[in-house]
Image (tube, rainbow, N blue to C red; front, top):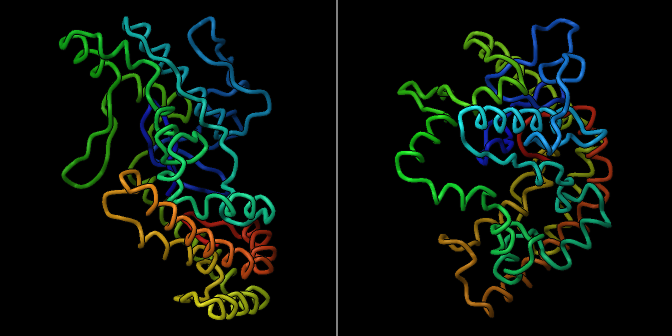
Length: 311
């Protein structure tokens, strides 16, 4: 399960047939009609002059749906007498340079930032470093000053107008009425029934199981994963799995366990630099040991994609 940002918060999305869709929302009636909010359904991309943001030309479907949702939330809030600025600047983030799919790009990144865990403490003023002080400053709502100036009663009315998700005793999360719900339905279609969600979840699990089985049973990948593991052991790095779907992230996940419980931003600079230097060394060894494996793995992963993390 992945997440996308809508209305400044992260909402769950589920991968189905290689496309990310918002969990709990439909993309239409299953026919040949265009998805809700698409140009084919009669909706046009709002322009900044109407309070919305124009959808980039050539945007993929997931990005387009988020733009439609954000613009719909802004329009809904305007009708209720409030200000809401669509937040879409971080939607087109490039694929992670860490995973090693692009070897040269990953090497350039890892030579400076390792896996990116201790980097926020060493480069607090670099906005490109996820978790750094500068990066988090970019995440401040553009409406923060406006919201802070609202009287308590007006802020309460604003929050009610926006709506939110509510966790039920059963564990199910439901959307309360409001502009966020309206925006999501505008971008993704009406909410699905629980029975439909259950059927899709079961289908997704079966698809993921089959994809992982295909990858983990591929003789070439199995052989390359074994060589990857042998190289890591020679470098003094512990190996806890040789499964093709897991070994690519194994060293990265092991490094997470070395992080301080209260985060890295409070670390002493000298201590953080020492930890980052060690992390860089491990990250580069992992990259070199896994170079041949990843070159073969990612093309196969494109054929047998699954939700979650792996590779």
